[in-house]
Amino acid sequence: MKLAVIADLHANLTATLAVHADIKRRGIQDIWVLGDLVGKGPRPREVVEWVEAHSNVVVMGNWDARVAGASNRPQDVWPRAQLSKGQLEYLSGLDFAHEEIFGNMLWRFVHASSKSVFHRVYPHSSLPDQREMFYPQLERGLTEFADAVVYADVHEALMLDVEGRPLLNTGSVGNPLDTVLASYLILEFENTGYSVSFARVLYDREIEIAVAEKSGMPFAREYAQELRTGRYQKRRAKT
Ligand SMILES: [Mn+2]
Image (cartoon, rainbow, N blue to C red; front, side, top):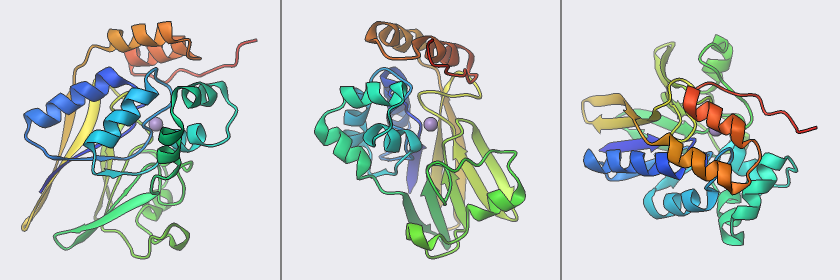
């Protein structure tokens, strides 16, 4: 079985469609989405529509929770206003995690960590923090130790070995913060084991920046900077 695992689309339709074309070109049928469909970018409605049409597994991200919830930050209120009632219900109904056995390994898929969509685990986080990604979390319905964890959230593609267990990060489709290329993971499972590839896709980010600048969305300037540089820009409230 061959699987494309994508995440952090962040309402960037141009990047999402470029990644979709790349996935199709490789003949991959299954697309799993690890959250943050919306937030930061200009086209939340179109990207949620795309995810509903093309993916088989979707888990919730921190931005999905805030946008579909009651947050009053401008960057959450704006996308909320672009989405239909049905799309907001879809986002708030997303699962926290997905687990599946491939070969003899239990693979866990979450957005940010096994504890919460708001609990961030960095490549440089402590070993106890990384180790916790594999633990059961009974309040989240995760009853077993995982053998492998795939996550997203930090917008940096990554593969770490945590005491013999793989900890993989997809990187970000719509808002990469390690390079400017859209990023996703390809997992291939065989009886004899598995393989992991990191895909990077060039897309026309100026198209999405132009849409953002016309859209009236908050923090369009910071967004454009992030797409052009692949570096995080602080959002400061206007005074
Ligand atoms: Mn994100």
